[in-house]
Image (cartoon, one colour):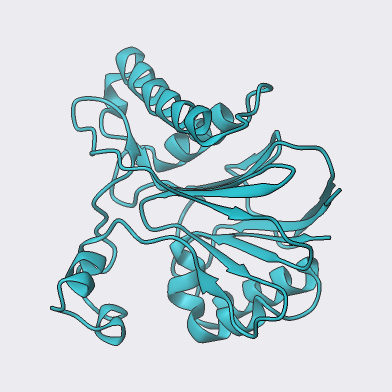
Length: 256
């Protein structure tokens, strides 16, 4: 039986007026808060979902969108396979539509989503938008990004019009091509999923773009150091040293 040792933090950063990120660990939702120290969990009951969400910048009520999607995923009946997970995420989008029906001023609210459904024998990684899941397998030196951004620059990279290095400073870097959203101005929804064996010694890292974009290479190295709590705290410091222009949300989980 595996257990998960987890640390997580969500923080407004230095320039944003509010935190539009949210996170989920099991049935615990952290939304509309700004933490200075990580929260911790130990989980040995499955299935369980870990997820981060980033309310779309420039959209209406990004904080509401990310919070409500996390609340939908935190329902007592957790999915136990890819099909039911897919249905749950679509139900979260439908919930955003229902919000807009009662509050037309929220038309177009949206959020990214990235997460892990942990089962007894495997994990299912899912994403929509440009929040990410990274994984380090036992015996490997580096950490690998397991998700592919839904973004304009990612499409340009795939067609050879842009290099990875050029993408980091491209003016269209934060324009995403898919997200969970509601109302008449709804975005297309493309949920990407992949399934992997669960192994003792694996480290999972989930984060919004305020971490991977501004933390850069320092983030990738710090993500492998120490236990989840100390690594999370170090990454928060790295983002602050980089100016923390965006909200910062991060989950680190070790399979033990």
